[in-house]
Each structure stands twice: as structure tokens, then as C-alpha cells.
Length: 100
Image (tube, rainbow, N blue to C red; front, side, top):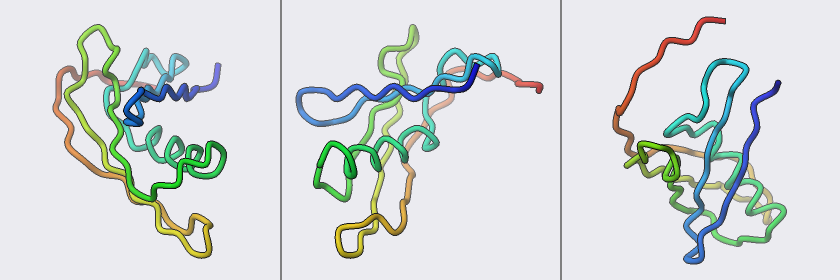
């Protein structure tokens, strides 16, 4: 089964996101730019969310909610995404080893 990205947008336009990779034994990753970057790109390209910078709250609906906050910056040229920067603050709440 492939990994899936499920975006959920809160009322105040702070996106909530989760990254799921059950085929690798990861029910949900608490903080990952691998999910936040594509979410920001999707919101800009498809949902016409016209901000080039946004904060993303990952993993807030996990059994042990993540205190992480990610910042995404889209570098635009003529309205098209040229680059994407993802970073932020993350806190370890659990460690797991994935073997594949």
C-alpha cells in the first residue's frame, strides 16, 4: 500500500496535516516536511490559497498530539512555484526504527 497524504484545513486557514506510511510500519508521522511541502503546493496551485508562506500543524489529531509547527515558504516567479523551503520546530515524543 502506498503512503497517502490527507490534507485538512482548519477554519483559521492554518492547515493541519498528517503523513501516513503504513507499508513502512508508520501509522502517522508527527512532523514531516515531506507532507507539508506538497500540501502547501497543492493549496497554492489547486485551492488558490494565494499565500506564499504558511504555518502547518502536523499530527495534532494523533493519540499523543504533536507540539510541532512547520513553516513553508514558496518561492514564486510569475505566479508559478519555483522552489519550496520547509522547516520549523519539532520535538521528539517517540522513536521507532523502520527496516525495509
